[in-house]
Structure formats: structure tokens, C-alpha cells
Image (cartoon, rainbow, N blue to C red; front, top):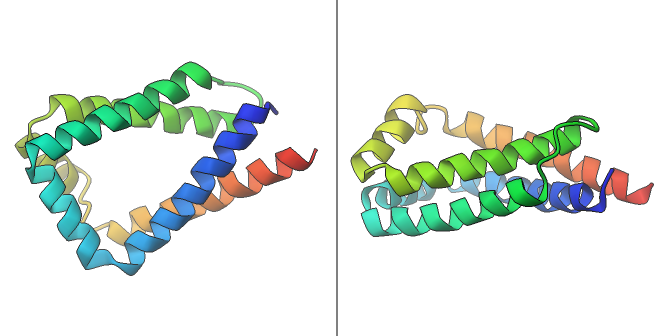
Length: 134
């Protein structure tokens, strides 16, 4: 496994664990923050630019579709960040609200999304540190 895959796996894994746990501990504050963000066009645009940049960097630097599950998951996260950033840039706040609250049912499945983040983070972190020891 490449050193970049190992590094990104550890970085993304620890990020997913910490943010997922923080979100689940502060559900009401998180939901309020996401709601305000989605209704604020300038903040949504800035978030889109930052997320798009992160996604582009990951896709350009780590577009690996073979070598096991870990590198593929890291690549998928990069592509998802790229798509999410583009959506935030091109969707109106009303469309973004419809996507999060309507299509994804973010409030109803809040803890499910948080648990997915934590479980994914544990897998990425474990895989990243395990591959670094080899």
C-alpha cells in the first residue's frame, strides 16, 4: 500500500471518528448549524469552494481503484467530496435544504449518519496504521 493511501486513511479516519462523535454528542447544535448554513448562500458557496478544493486534491492525488478495499474507500471519499463541493457551488440554498432535509432525511437519520462516520473512521484509521507498520 502506498504511503499516501496510508496517510490519507489515517487522516480521514481520525477526522471521521472525531467529527462523528462530536456531532452525535451535540445533536441539537449540529442540526441548527447545518440548517443555518444551508439557508445562507454566501456560507454555502464558501463551503462549496473549500470542499471542492479538498475533493479535487484527493482525486488528483489519489485516484486508486485497485489494491484492496482501503485505497478504494479513500478514493471514493475524494470523489464524494468533489461531488458535494460542486453541488454546494451550483445548488441554491432552497435546493440544498431540499437535498439534506428532504432527500437525505438528515434529521431523521442523524444518528445513523453519525454511526456510519464513526465506523468508517475506525476502519480507515485501523487500516492506515496497520499498513504503516508493514
